[in-house]
Image 1 (tube, rainbow, N blue to C red):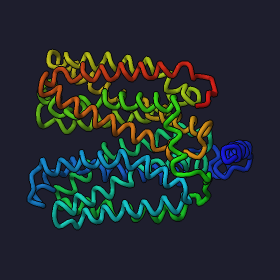
Image 2: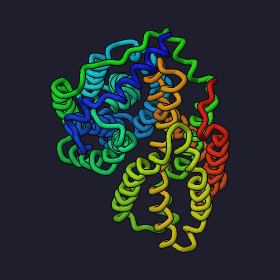
Image 3: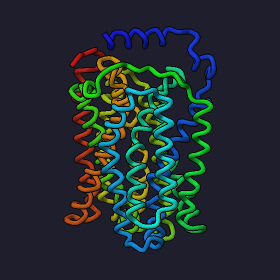
Image 4: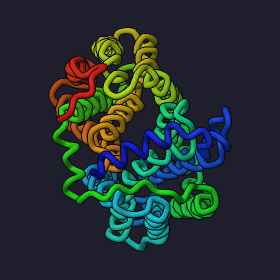
Length: 420
């Protein structure tokens, strides 16, 4: 009965001609609420990734090894992945606005603790605190789509929320690194904390307070995981992410040893790659506009095949350096092309068959991608040890082919409303 009521409510909302988003936004996409949610993703990304840029400064300041500080990155991902679906399932039972601001408060507390951490154990606790809420915050951001923009811009909204992380890689991390090198690593976290306070104030003022709560049990939400469309979507994302992170984890050594890029230009090379990744996230929104449900991800099967071919050709980078550099840029443009399409699959399948699991569905992309990162990085490490940098691309191509197979298996569900 709850599912029927929720579905009727969604249909009623879609048929409303006086939708607040329609009236306020008109034909504009970048309204203040949308910009705030994109900025929130930027802050989440900056806080997550900046450790990589200021790693030596933290190690020196806390008098621990760089390897010890480097472990914070792996631990962050390890906590992020399971906490995202659990936190999203729990948050779906509470008012969205209050939950979102509360979790942002936890995020702020974690960054303040990072800034004042007297030793490594305290810094570790602070990073665990941030990791425990970051994925859930992204998931809740996605559920604001019907209330801050129109259906016309739904996939664009998804793409831009994800792009906040890419913008953080291209802009936020270099700025944070410069601040750390100039004023000290703690000042970087002061900066993140101050920006987060500003963000919280803006959120309190402009974000909609309405909620679409469906009264379902905590465990009932996880019926979503028994849907085959969800299985295939998750596996496609895991394999797609792994295909890139097999080599991306070792991008700096590849630029140095395979492409033969001079040391003084490697930072520039990383920025160019980051820009390519940003384009990838934004264009993903265009690709996700081709259909509803499983269709956008199914249409990307040939994109995964092309990605596999490019990854395999990366083995030639050490033979022709300029070719290797060009291939890396194009690989950056392929890296996130499936992000918005997979998010559309999760959200549409949940809306159709599991309406009480919308928050959980919104979290699946972050969860799946982080699992793919962990697998790709681990496999890349083994491949590098036994085969060398030259073969990281071809090994990644295997994962891209697996992603293609998973997306092809979505074919029977295209254009059909198949229940579990």
